[in-house]
Image (cartoon, rainbow over all chains, first blue to last red; front, top):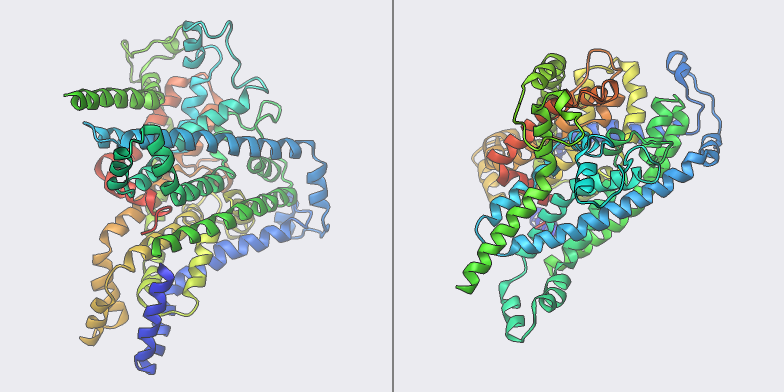
Length: 316
Length: 273
């Protein structure tokens, strides 16, 4: 859609006088220059710097001496040999898949529910945005308090409902910690899914539902044959955005478990942080960061493809 | 009659859903008002019946400086982001520019770069430039997340401003800068509010740059303050939850007074129309 708009604009421009066109190009460049410079310095440089660092033995001393010997792929080899790396990859996948699946299904169910017209639906829906707008550190702290083994509300509720015989060690057991951080992250991500999917639902014309109802389709059939197919473009974008955001989550894990206990909730992001800022092995931290970039880019490219597909669908 | 009762049932169900999903926030406020002794009882108090403001007193005495730091960094991020993104969006949306599509593609791509990678590299640069434990350092780092977002959002809006408006201004003798300040900026007010609001919220919530680009001395935003509070004395849940409540205030205020802009910003990344 935007592409065609730009193309027509370009055609109009060629009809203008060439002198003015050049002056407009220069002006445009001048307006764009600060952003261009910022992106080169603050994205270009870190990306290259990170690549270079990952091939160097970069330690605390390097900051003072300015020297870091070239070690080739030793950092990557060290990372792959690190037993925590495998755990981090598995956890990143479990964390991302678990978060997105439940964020999306709960978000979609709520979007369908709040799409109906009833008293207060708009107000209630906007209240649900709050968890998403809060600083992640705040949400993480609250959930850490709720997960507290002895004084947390979650264990108290389970006890009151006779669902658990003893207190569950949510954050101190290696098998419960990962589900606990995933649960926290689901709570944080539901509002985002709800809002975007609700926007997508609103764009579906009412006549289609009326026609389906006349044809005798029940609620589930209407969802299956009208809502779901027409929501496809938005669904793709929500899932991809969720993937790109979730794969690099840092705050939630750091605050709720700090990657522990015994590395049970370590992901690639927290591992990279730990290597650089705790062990001061900046070269290895950079190597893990680069592996994360490769993962995020793969997903990002899929996102861009689906975004372009849905954009051209809208345009046609 | 049947549909009316049906709608009422849905309102009740909606209330229940909201109550369940917002319960953690109630639990935060509840804990922020209860004396630490009450919080450590075997069965939790559901209401702050014997409430106390001690937690808020401790939060303010220990964290007020951090809250102010966060405020300065967030406002600075808003200014820097808009100052860089506004002219760029004008060039991309209203002026013919070579490589404009390429530039947009780059702004989309850089948003996917994980923050930890940026932090890793920025730490080495900033420590050489003296930008660690520094307002400007954090503002510039936070802007890496907000500038690409602001450019995409503002450009998408400015494309809808008819080009005839700025053409007419130029025929009347206005230069590009004049056209930008007296036509584009006033017309883009709503999109600017949305972009500014999200820049503020991002910088306010930022933890990754805050923890990596500060050394833990006196200079720290409130997110780092809460994190250290949790690590140092995790028994003082009353004080921690009071600080967390204070740190949630900007988001709550913005949701109440600027909900329209919030929704506009959230959907802008995903639903392009």
